[in-house]
Amino acid sequence: MLCSRRGVQRKMKDGFLMERIDILGVGIDNVTMEEAVERAMELLTDGKRHYVVTPNAEILYECGRDAAVMEAVKNADLILPDGAGVVLASKILGTPLKEKVAGVEFAVNILPKLVEAKKKLYLLGSKPGIAERAAIKMRELAPGLEICGTHDGYFKDDTPVIEEINRSGADVLYVCLGAPRQEFWIRQNIESLCAGLCVGLGGTLDSITGEVKRAPKIFIKLNLEWFYRLIKQPSRLGRMMRLPKFLMQVFKYKRK
Ligand code: UDP
Image (cartoon, rainbow, N blue to C red; front, side):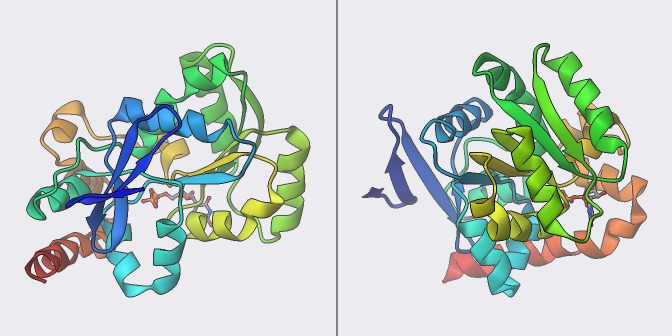
């Protein structure tokens, strides 16, 4: 490991330097989408258990308020900047991230690599029926993709779900239970799971099926995806109020 002004750098097997940018005490991996996919695939090669998180500004704000959330996010092997708020924070702090790596896009972009590497994917989360529909869509997006099982996210007992995932022979598990429940779930169960890589992906299955529509491209381009989601789901207002609070924290952090 090397230390730089911007944060900690880790040297990967192929010599690539992974740099972590400190935002409110969480080291966010400074990677492009392509690099994120490459690193995730590399994590699948050593036979150990790894997990990826995709925190947005709301979750980073929660990390500062709840030590358990911080612990679950901070210990991930790959921490991707999901959202314009995180990228904006990195700029405010004078250590700009290369780009936003949205969880939903990461989840789709890695699929052809999973096909190439013959890795099996299991989808966990969302309302009954959504994961099955997402599986159909994903197979269309990445022909040859092996989705070895699906399960909705509304279960009480973890044990039978874990047994089913393990029986399926999954190499990769998408955990879409919403944040921070999914991060806690992964932390708690990772050692009982056979999958080498768990990825916490929030509402990704809803987006892939169109159950929850992603914002039109123009909103995404103008970094206003949050505004579109607010119009569509006004019930998110409470959660979204964390964004200005997050930015205030970032300014305070900068002055420290
Ligand atoms: N969810 C779930 N089990 C639960 C609560 C939520 O599977 O007990 C799912 C929910 O159906 C939705 C996702 O978790 O698909 C959360 O979506 P949201 O957009 O709120 O996620 P985030 O903003 O955390 O990415």
